[in-house]
Image 1 (cartoon, rainbow, N blue to C red):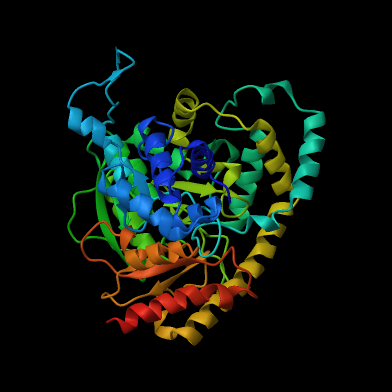
Image 2 (cartoon, rainbow, N blue to C red):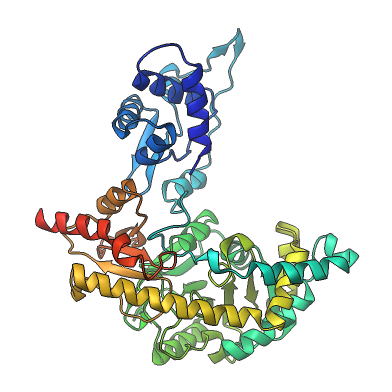
Length: 491
């Protein structure tokens, strides 16, 4: 796969003065960084990937990376890759503005403290699809023909207002279709007007943080938990309080200062896979009502349960207004759709819709209307049924190969749901280093330990199986098995 960095470096190598290939590669990277063509904070391609792009040996790329790192141009982040430093060495040494063609060069623009904090803990990867990338569906099975047919039909008679900014938190046909679907499939209690359409769960959470919290307010998050929740909340100046998760979901501390928000994934906890028990759900709702805390229910992966009945949404158990329900189409359809939604308490609905319009504006009118028809005509439910069967087969194939190659004790999560498994590792095995080693072999995993905010961490690898066919699972897993066995032998 071609990358912008690879194309830029290939061109500069061709234009460079004669010299060894390693020297020309080093010069091309250094000059591109100095001139800002590769900007600070950019993640460079993995050495193996760049070597393949440029048709050079991996050792040549590694040597250039290592030299640039030693000079302060690059830095490595365990489990994440190689990045261009935010402050380049020339700036550090000068201590003042330089001159460019007899004119002062502007000093490097600095980021805010929260900006630097966000980048230092960033969890998003440049690679978002492939074996064993967690959290992504198999987009190859999306029914494009059906979707395109609906879109063409709607586009012929597209209302004028659809071409402008959306009003009222989204377009009414989608809100109506969603309300009916959620009542039937997730036992969510809502009317169409309670639904606010957003451009992703991150945007939903960002809006809630801005409108419901003040700087320094406490927010409970799951420990371990989804890095995206922490990033969005922290950049809004909120105080994150990690709360441990066990086999029944979020544990309630016996004595604690009540938080403003409690962010949970009760139907399929990310990343452990725990399902919050009914007793724990009731206890949480009673606790939130008593102290006036709002529960943010991210109904992550709720549609994909294999061989078990779906778990009803927490929101349906709440007779008051203590739960805000978040949902998305990123896993059930495809991430690039960028449509998600919130089910808001009636008392918040109008105010948050106005705030959403002020901060982000709405849009995607044709897409929203297409999705509404896609749901109303039954295509959405049929697609989920097909994908549930497909993912169930892939999950079973991955479980089988793990048990065969490593042993059943390496299955660190036994919930029959979601799009990933946890490969449990002994604490002596560095899961961050192991994940980085596998990345160099073209296998994409996530180390479990990075999902913990505190010192007590379990080690393991999060393996997404959605993008690997059942037939190819055993062969695809072999690099993982070899690396794990090698690490175990070393201990």
